[in-house]
Image (cartoon, rainbow, N blue to C red; front, side, top):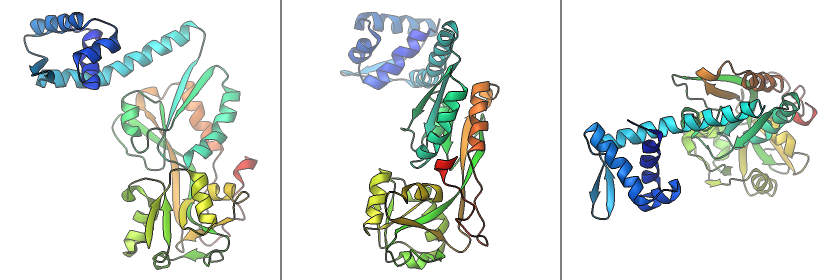
Length: 314
């Protein structure tokens, strides 16, 4: 009765906004599309959509069918892709979603040895899931989510794989460059440069500035890490980034890290996956390899840079 075609029609109708657009994407005639859905409506005894002038509006039944389509079709597509890979002697594809800007540089350090260890596994990295990766996991668009801020949901499992310290980044000539640590009030005179992310998801706000009732002189957003570092190095502002990332850039631009507060801000990178994928060996191997490339955040009573290795040496 209910077929995959019906789900695809409802999904494309929602995406394209018209029968003509849906028919074009599905490579069928508009009349054939309408006939298929009319037959389904007769079989189930309810309307899937209603015509309002030149547009169509999904009924409650249609909205339910759309939700089913959005949940099931990605799973069917993934199943077909993996069956094709098995038929061609391939192991599979590991699709990784990125939910943080600076994590990409860290990921490169893991992907390289992983590809060498698993030559029959393809790796696809998707960076479009900025703070939207949970839906991508549930929607079977990705298999692993890299995030510093996991949202624990039933059906998903997050594992910490990498400890790091969030620090303030300043120009080497900045007045704060030689400080052991910075206090929140000292940033009231600074232009704070961050990635284009809501302030409630930025650690420097929710773990440093806002608890002290402090805001910076101005908040500026930049998406590209290279440009952000150049802006900081030229004295146009300060930023908050992982210490290891600052150390990577310190050889290219004149910037230095300064601890945020006496005790610093400890963070972790997590890898999230669906519970049902826990027995996939090449996925498990990636998580294990990610752990091997990590080091631990150093407490305030130790010399901050003496035992934190340069990531390029790992």
